[in-house]
Length: 120
Image 1 (tube, rainbow, N blue to C red):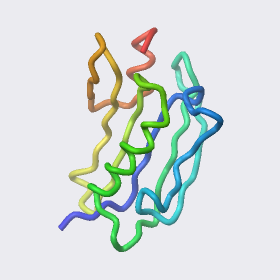
Image 2: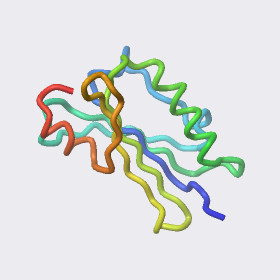
Image 3: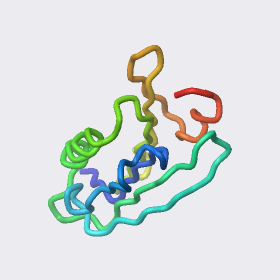
């Protein structure tokens, strides 16, 4: 059985209204760290890293909490989700952005997507 052991959410820094940030416990984790990074992109990015999962944490719970948190952001906000599992062979890095008014998923870091797209 695979277990979600760590997860991260990356969004453009300016898209966080009032500096809103997720609560670790809502996502099924005990710890949360926030890192602001400057990549070769038009905007700075903020990464929230969730660690120390609760015993009841599973991927579905995390995904539901993520969907709820994203409601606080403007529609069209690009974001990246990284998930680390007890079996490293199934770790994920997926980025989501809107293209032609449709949500698109790519298995690439958000900084790569934003550096090649002048408008997201």
